[in-house]
Image (cartoon, rainbow, N blue to C red; front, side, top):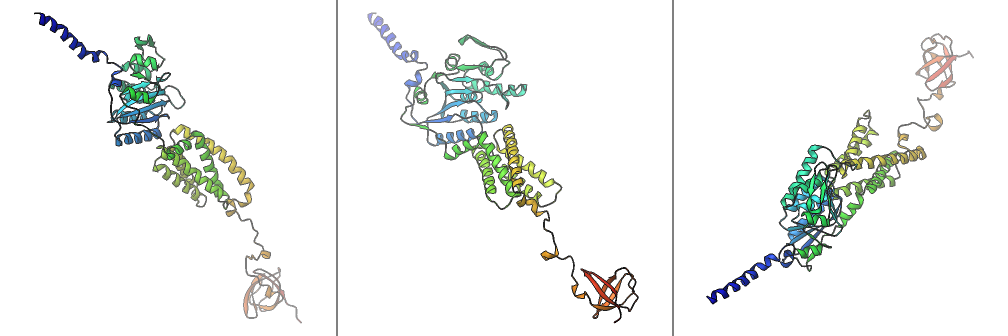
Length: 451
């Protein structure tokens, strides 16, 4: 009996020993588990558009190829295109490599959608997640019910995938919903939008941990800091980022338009044409590397430029010029990330180029292409021009009229028949005559006086 009583405390001690790690679990459980594999950090610090999409796709491929154990998305973005965010969300959630979104600054708008698609969310102190309502190019909220419903469903689906409250995701995307958040004693009313601080996100389950650096986030998940790689942008990607800046794009378009047109209307300089072509090449190359432009933009631009040149030499009643202008504008606009920004840049560049072109045309009016279409030289006899063969050798020569001259007719001079006229009088046939004037083909004669 005593042995049984002694066995009970022993069993209790063993049970407590086995269950102790369970009670000590929670958010620190990841730190207790050491994991193998390198950590690959991908900066998400640009607006979400095709350029960032290409960059992130390259990063995921490199991380998978090197056998990384964890991908850290270092997020600080104002958001961007919905279609690009949707594609990147699929890329993140279908990645065979574990992902964690480290929100360094703002995971706003489409940035919050990317974070919600990661396996875990870690936020830094002072960071923010949310404010994901759709806006147009002017910054106004989109009120199209279909578009809002579509985006809200995407946000809710991303939240549900990782076990988060989908109502909060709806409140981030739709200004018209009401959301109760008792964990932080807040209620989101109509007309408001949800944007959570790091502490608030942790309380409502939209953050799993708070860390100051991506390396700390990786360590919390059990990865060491001895094998950490940060993805760097290539030289081409950095150049592309510079060239796709709206101000730089406007300058390139200005130089391109002004240079090419000046070279066409004032040929022979070479420099304006070279500057114009190089500017257009830089414009399209920057957008092509960024992933905004495809091969069709180069084709549209080239065809448009050729049509504009042909219009100057082939009469087409303006058809070639109109088609060329449409192709040029379409190529420039399609190459840009945002069509509205592209139209603004093109308008500013065109207006500025027009002023410069007008000044150059006035200054170099004597060398303009229009000189090819205007006859400025006088074709006079002193310059060697003659409208007909001169018959000066007939002046003073005597002959005989072969026909009556009334006053025109035909005469014979040294065996040559010549059309002649009198100075107004009548001369009968077979009458001796003498040439008194020879003005081109007009040979004036009068009756010869008897010797």
